[in-house]
Structures are given as C-alpha cells and as structure tokens.
Image 1 (spheres, protein in one colour):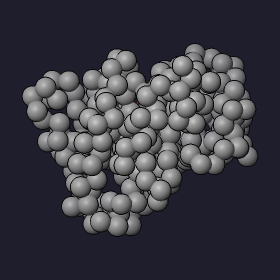
Image 2: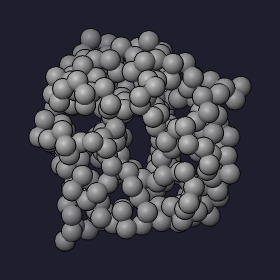
Image 3: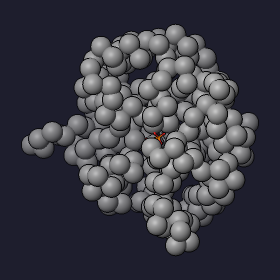
Image 4: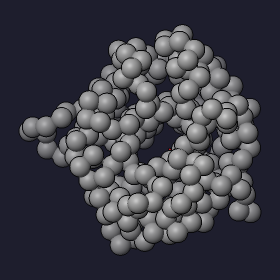
Length: 256
Ligand code: PEP
C-alpha cells in the first residue's frame, strides 16, 4: 500500500449466489457494514442478471458495482453477449477483463482480452485487467515471462486511455485453492509488473497505477498483503460471499 494510491478491493461473486433475493440480501449486508467508509474503494462484481438490483441496493452508498466480463462487440447480432454500454446502463462502472477463469474455461486468449479491454474503455467502463501464471509456469521459473507477455495487450493503448486502469495479479495456483501467495511472493511480482508498466508508459503512470493481488485472500491474510509497498488492493473471490469476512478484509482486520 502506498499513501498516494487509494486502495481498491473487489469482490468477485463468480457464479454465486443462485437467486436475486440472495444477491440483494448480500448487497444489503455489505452496505450495512461498508456503505459509508471511504478509505478503500470497494467494487462488487455480482453475476450479470443481478447487477442492476445490486446497484440499486447500493445506490448512494460508497460501494460500486461492476461486471465479471463483457463482450468484445458493442452491438448487433451476437447472441448471449453483454456490451459495456449495457453494463453502464444498469449501474455498472467497472468490468473484469481476462480473469483466469475466463481465460482457462472460456478460452479468452490475450488477443480477446485486449479486445475486451478496448470494448470496456470505448463503452465507458473502468477495466480491471487480470493476469497471473499457472502452477506449472511458476514451477518452471516462467512467472515474470508470463506476466510480461500478458501485459503486452496494453501496448495498443495510449496512456491517456488508461487513466482508470487497475491491474490484478492473480496467480492461478492461488485462486480458489486456499493457497495464498506469501506477501513477499506477491510483492516481488507486483514490483516487476510496475517496472514493466513503467517501461511501456513511463514513471508517472506506473507510480499512480493500482495493482491488486488476488488468490484465496482471507481476513487473516489481507493486512499482511496490503503492508507490501506495491500491493494496492485485493481481488477477492470466495471470501467476498461472506459479508462479515469481506468487511474485515476491507478493514484489513483479521476476523479470526
Ligand atoms: C478471484 O476470483 O479473483 C479469486 C481470487 O478467487 P478466490 O479469492 O476464491 O481465490
């Protein structure tokens, strides 16, 4: 955490919960706990069908809402697709691009992730670009090469287009596995990412860019991660479905 960068914590609900009632109830519980705090920017990523009602539930609170994904296309004959403009229209401000589950399960390549980033920016959504290596890649010593390659999608943008960009470093081996990277392991990669971004866009941009860590974050591990100088926030999956646990993560306070 760095004094010049406001921490940003995301709650990625993935394919949960299963009903609108449960989603709105979770949003209400989070609003009660976190709705007026301003020190940390908090963005919830509910499933698309619930986004509007969740955004309504959080209206005039400090909690923001985003989509877990978007289509490359802006409009037209693309069955099942959801555009950035639609996300904006139902109260979403942010969008995840290139989450590892999108990459691994749905086949989003770097090229598609780049197009999604472009679609998000063109449609007025603030993007969180997710990157990170697999266990095999880490064990083969390829972590830096993999994240450097994933960052190449940024090359096709001007720095002026990327003012709202947030990066999320999410080592795939830590997502949903209970195996969190140590603060030192995460810091090492965050620093490398910031240096790569500096090479692409210069020091000023790199210094103001926020980089989240994601992968099995719990309240017990949040503070240790956030104490690292280049970790500016957290992207939380499983623990974001538990209101008190997620609130403790946002407070950097262990619930145990
Ligand atoms: C995620 O979905 O981005 C994530 C980090 O999940 P989890 O916290 O469950 O590992």
